[in-house]
Image 1: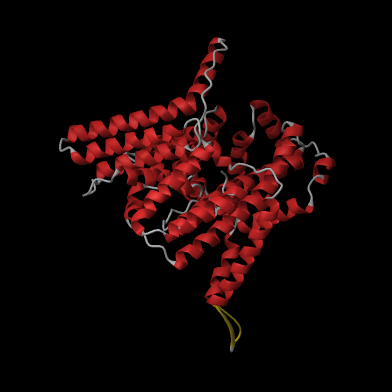
Image 2 (image 1 turned 180 degrees about the horizontal axis):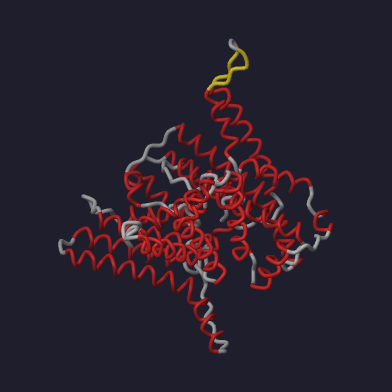
Length: 472
């Protein structure tokens, strides 16, 4: 069930929201768990019980950690639980890739095909977060199974994040307030995310898909760069749109989820890019992998190794394939290079050059991330650097809707529009004529409702595109 589907927008969400709002506080968690499990079962019938079993493993492991006094027993429960969870993740996500790679090396055609459960990369990371957090800071009261199940399965973040650290949401799992202000902010954020997905990401993505299917990456110079820029904007607005919708839904039900994007394309170093892109994933790796490995406290070269290893894991986390591994290594290479001294030279360079450097590295990195096979990647890369002109027919396929989506994508990729928030505090046309914050908010709400109506008309009768990060 997609957030951008008619079923979700007009049936599931209104029903769940209104019932949740009407219930007494002590019944809301139970109802939200039931709704979340129905939401997940709608998307994943075959491996639905894998989610429940993994939650049981995390809960039982946490229960042992909290209740036993022996430090050895606590550590054994932590490590064994994490091994079980990681084993499930490796089996369902990577066995097919590993057997395919091994078979190709020995000239065999024995391949194990395993169905990838939706959202497993996200809910396993949540379960690890729970185990580590209760190990480091045991709660005074043992969280019940239902509380752990709610943390892991609450539907706004279950399938594609953002990744939520258990210690940061623990209080809201037990007690949270629903206010009119929070609900209104939630709906606003949800509408913004929906418009990003439907009006920008899907519009650009349809053209990207069509061009790559018909050309196999052999696009010509101009078209190759244009489609790469389109895809870079598509994946940003697709994923940030989902994050906005998840954060908005969280607010509607009283939760505060972490921000996941902070204008990553304005970055002036690759290190800064990763402090702005998928921030919840970066925070998870920092807290549970990078710092436990020693972080930057273990000497220069060990720190560089730690950084490289984290980016290697980031690539693997995104997908079982050499293209994802290469993407992680590519970004890790540039982050390590900046730590070795490149960043000092960048600081002296003009801001435009630093910005151009980041965009070039990031855009080239999206090539293997998006291309379906090695040949497409090579053809696409070749088209980027040769002098072969693009076919005019490709450019004739771009209608005004695509150019409009492209224009809005460029505008909202940069924080220029945030000047509106300054205006919303108080804007004066003249000294004695002012528009108060409430009036501007009312106007912006009307605009958002109008955009929501456009999204609905676009959705009706159109095949829905799944969010890109569902595959992870």
